[in-house]
Length: 67
Picture 1 (tube, helix red, strand yellow):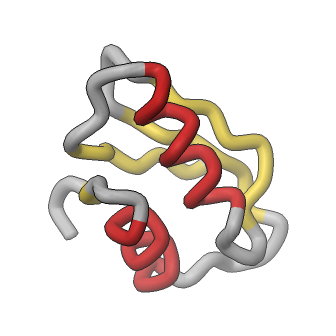
Picture 2 (cartoon, one colour):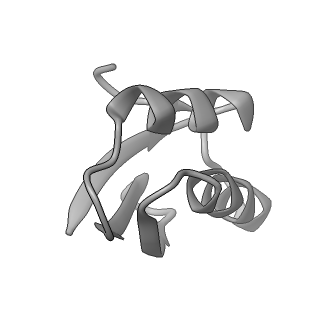
Picture 3 (cartoon, rainbow, N blue to C red):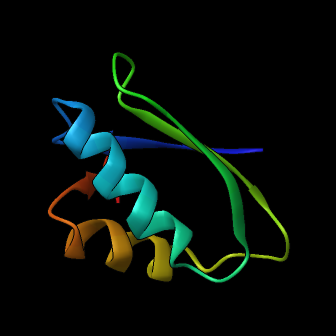
């Protein structure tokens, strides 16, 4: 299981937007978002490129902390 700190989420709409963004990245499955912690966790079906995750999250209007 992989965990990302996501900056900019404040509501359930944000959770849905980040979930949709991450689900569009090849190899990502079983996404769970913890709004209070500002974290997204997911399983990798195959190795996932961090640049692809970052691009998907930023396109949705959020940021991966520390990237």
